[in-house]
Length: 348
Image 1: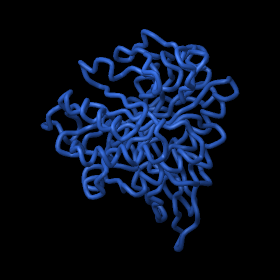
Image 2 (image 1 turned 180 degrees about the vertical axis):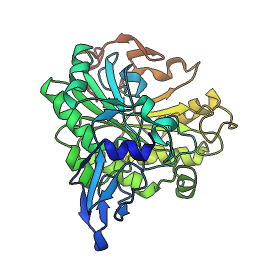
Image 3 (image 1 turned 30 degrees about the vertical axis):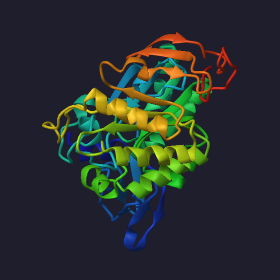
Image 4 (image 1 turned 45 degrees about the vertical axis):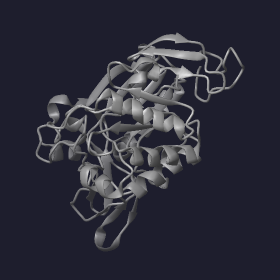
């Protein structure tokens, strides 16, 4: 079964659109706002127009797994907890360094059924509860383009007292965030570059729309953590990293910023992995720009750069080794035991 056959079979009508002239529809799932003609698909390849109505993915997952919440990464959300992660197909970007290209960016004729599992929203929520995972996460592909399915799953999760999260490129529309607001708690946003020309060239995305999306996520009250994959020759200049850090700090100095190492992937197999010193330098830039919580990850030798320290007295509060938490002094309290400073995040 091709991807097109799969998404046409596993789909459902959605209200996240506006009618457009000539029987077309304007999709509201992301800030691309594709105008899709009759019988055509949006940029994401999974949302399509049939009879002047928009259809979106429904009723399946391309992958499901139990992961540490640190792997998403969320460092200020329930440290050490397990998260049930699920994904579908499709993305509104085309990143040359995509780490999940088999699910996010399969070609229109790709054979995709081998990893497609039919499932109901309630079954996903039940699986999280049975596995004692307090968090359920829409990830692997771009969750904005499968927002209807995510909301259905999250609504079931809320009935069981679970928390919910997106791992996203943040090219979000206000409409889709309002649509998700009743049942979405946490949002991990990628800030892939701070150079508009390179953003478009390498990711297919629009930097202005991403920045607006991040601003919307923060202003609408979702818990936000930002990730920048530091790619040699793409976004690793000190000047660009300073701009990214300044933007985040301009929203709030308490937004965690994760700077992570790149490894060869997808269309960039010959690009060298990011040297650890480059990632650590990016972290220092973030701290100098006033961010209180900057983490260096996805590499060996990060030392204490993955730990959470009190921004006032410097006490070690959460100690991490890779995806494992070895010390957590914030569990159930969220305040520094040494000085009483409240640490932003969700700790219980």
